[in-house]
Image (cartoon, rainbow, N blue to C red; front, side):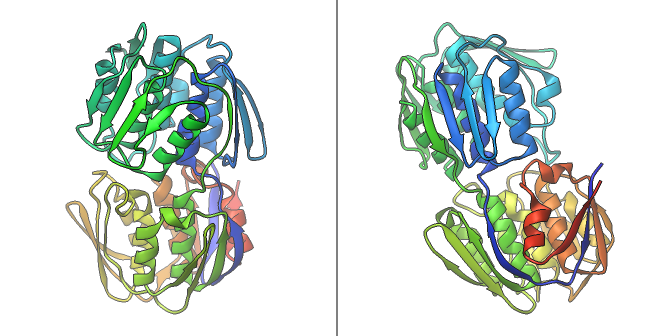
Length: 416
């Protein structure tokens, strides 16, 4: 199992490119199930989760061709509308095949999903919405067995804001008979990116980016060429790393407009940030200020940036309170940060972080994708050597992380 070895104490300097967004690419890949024509995607990140999704689609009968950041998919025939447990257990986003399979093939057999161990993320909102659209769904032996002669438009009020739930229902509604209204919809930029891709394929969608999305079903979708948006969480992770270590870095191919709250919090921490249309420059010097954050659905502070800001707060000047409102089990990285000398007290769904001047290197274990990124940032600022174990989590969501950080001057290497 691979590990990362980091020697801390270096400032970060230079320029790197932001990869395409994992959380946009995965639902967009599933959009290929909705048409028999070719969907050509660019700026697709080369990640374990993307490889898992393309393998899953291929075993359903989708022709997949991938080279560099380009992926072409053609679902002329769906020979096996099933997502088996073996392929779903490592990646929760696999549930996104359920809606498009029902819409196009009229049936689907999808394993209940797995993914990061960060708390309960039920799929009941997906099932409730699809049932409102006329699907018959039974959960048997760990699988969702779904059928629908043809989905029909419906008004769906989500009990809670769910990104994958919104995306699954939006995918399904594109081929439904009539108009679907999704209320209390997720507003994330990745939902908007999926809507833009579906529109390029001929779907009729209004309201993406608001809490009410209207989809008028069409008889068929066409192929399209589409470029996946930049990854705002990868961007935020590198920005937080520079704020922690100090230095001056430019991130190319970024999407600053999707990062308003993150950029505001980094400025509070003392970083100087200049943003253009598609790039961000950050400069930081000295110990960061402690910054409190409270996670919330977009446009609030992203839960996927919480671990990185906890690492930043660990050496902050003052005390920060980090409150997690999305997932109930997302402070496991706090225990690992304590191994590096961080002073963190967990109080319910809040972590009180009393900043210390320095962290000390140690061996730590990654517990989920974003926790891994927080531990890497902590390793970059710790005295001595830090080893981050179980980095297969990192490989699910960060393309060539050690290569990019190395290009900025970090002393980081992968141990096979």
